[in-house]
Structure formats: C-alpha cells, structure tokens
Length: 73
Image 1 (tube, rainbow, N blue to C red):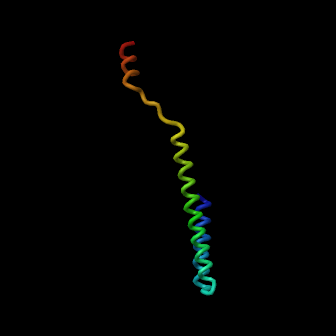
Image 2 (image 1 turned 30 degrees about the vertical axis):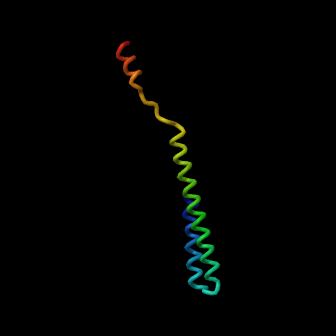
C-alpha cells in the first residue's frame, strides 16, 4: 500500500508542476496520468493477492452425512 501512496504522490507532484510550468504542462499531465495508472494497477494487484490468499484455504463445513454419522454412532 505504501507503493500506491508514493505513486499517487508522484501524480500529484506532476499536476502541481504542470500548474507552475504551463509550457511543459501537457507532458507533466501525461506523466501524472501514467502514475495514476500505475497506482491503480498496483492497488488491483494488492487486492488480488489478498483475495487469492483467502481463497487458497477454504473452510471445511460439516455435511449432513457427517451429522447423521455422529448421531448414529
């Protein structure tokens, strides 16, 4: 998550620089867009890793057959 924050900070810095340097504004705004795209991709990857970890270990539940075996025994 720290990486995402750093990438968004870079995008913000690029946008601020574009306001102070209008002659290079188009390039700096394009760079800001790049950093935002990279931050979104990193966040999506982080979320996928978290979801994959929770799906890798499914919870076992007792089936109705298990309950009947316990009752008969």
